[in-house]
Amino acid sequence: MNTTYDVKLGVIQHRTDRETPTFIARWRVAGKAKSKSFRTKGLANAFMSDLRQAAKMGEEFDIATGLPVSMLAAKSTGPTFLEFAQSYVLSRWSTSAARTRETDAYALLTLVPALVADAPRRPKDDELREVLRTYALIPEKRRPTPTDTQTAALGWLERASLPLTELKEPHVLRVALSAISVTFAGAPAGANTVRRKRAVLHHLLEHAVEQKAFSSNPLDEIKWTVPKAVTVVDPRTVVNPAQARQLLDAVPKVGRKRGPRLKALFACIYYAALRPEEAADLRLRNCNLPETGWGLIVLERARPQATKRWTDSGQTHESRRLKHRADKETREIPIPPILVAMLREHVAEFGTAEDGRIFSTGTGGTYSSSAHSYVWQEARKLALTPAQVASSLAARPYDLRHAAVSLWLNAGVPAPEVAKRAGHSVDVLLRVYAKCMDGQQEQINGKINAALDI
Image 1 (tube, rainbow, N blue to C red):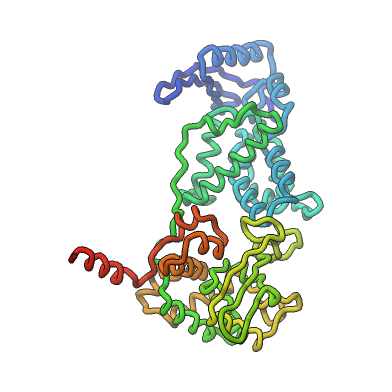
Image 2: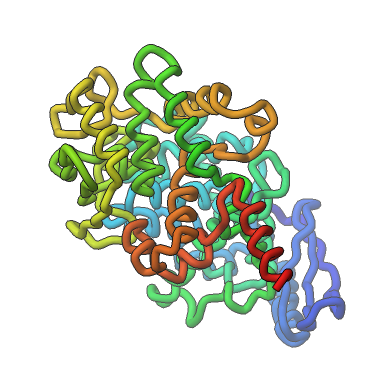
C-alpha cells in the first residue's frame, strides 16, 4: 500500500443534469483527483467530514483509493471485484461448456482492468488481459507457471481491484458499462458483444446478491440503453436451391483432400439444417441411409470448437450435448434422398474415424472452423459471380442452415415441424429464420401483381 499525507479536501458539487440529483464529493490525494457520488447532500457531507477528521488526526491516505487508512481497512472486509470474479468463474466451471467459460472470461478481461483504483505503475492493458486469460481466470490446477511480467501484472490487479461493494455506486457501474462498450483497441464494440458482456456482468451481480453482498442487483437501477442487436437473418445471405447445388458441387474442387472430405458436411448443413458443430460430431450409427428414398439422422451430440484452455480435455474440439437440450436428449431429422446418397458415397470413399465420426481429417482429427471457412470461400469463388462473391450471399457455411430453414418455411412446412428439425423453439424460428430465399422476389412480386389485377 502506498500512502501519503498530501491531502487537499475540495467541495461538494451538486449535479442537476441527471435524472436523479447527485452530490459529488471531490478531493485530491498526492495530487491525484478523487471523487465519490452520493444521492443526498447529507451523505456527501458526512463522507467529507470523515475525510476531514482523518486528515486532522494525522492519518495517512492511500494513494490508490484516496481513502484514509482507517476507512480503507473498514472497506476491505469483503472480496475485491477481482477475487469475486475469480470465484464466479470457477464456481460455474464444472457445469459450463467451453464456449460459455470463454464468454465469461472475455467479458471479465474488459471489466477487471476497468474496475480498479488509480494506483501507480499500472501495467499495460494487454499485460493485464494476458494474465487474466492465461492464469487468473482458470482453475488453479491448470495454471501454468507465471512469468515475471505476469506476476507483476497480477500483483498490481490484486492491490488495485476495487472492493466488490463499490459496484453499488452508480458511477462505478457506469465505468463498467463504458468499458464494455468499446473494443480492446478503443473502437465502438458491436451490439452483440456489448449485450453478451453486460449479461455476464448482470449474472455476476446476481451471484453477488445470492452471496448477500447486495440486497438487490445494482445494475437494475442504472438507466442505460442496451444496444439493439441484429436478431434476424439477412435475406441477402440466403441462397436458393440452384445456388446451393452449385456451391456444393464446387467444394470438392478446392484442394486435394479438404474439399472432397467436406462436401458432405456442408451438404448436411444445407439439406438437414445441421449446425456445423452438429455435423462435425455426426456418427455413422446416427444415420439411417437406405439405398432409396428418405433417410433419417438422429443427432446425439455436437462437437463445438473452443480455445484449449477452456475445454475439459485440453483439446480444441469436445463432444457435448446438443445446444438447448438436456444431456442424452436427441433430435430427429428426416433427410432427402440427395443427402442420403452423398453420405453413402462419402462413407464409401473415406470411411469413418475410429470413434465412428463420418467427417474427419485424414488422420482422424476434426477440421477447424478456419479450414471450413477457407474451403467455403474458395468454393464461392468457383460457383458464384464476382458480384455475388463480393456480396453477403452465403458468406459463411452457417448461411446454408439459414437457407435450409427458409426453404422449408417457404415450402409450406408447418413451423412446429421446422422448429423440431432445426432444434429451435417456434418463437425463435419465426422471429429469426422466416425469410425469403435469394431469387424469390420476382415470384412473390408476380403473385402480388396477379392479386392486384383481380
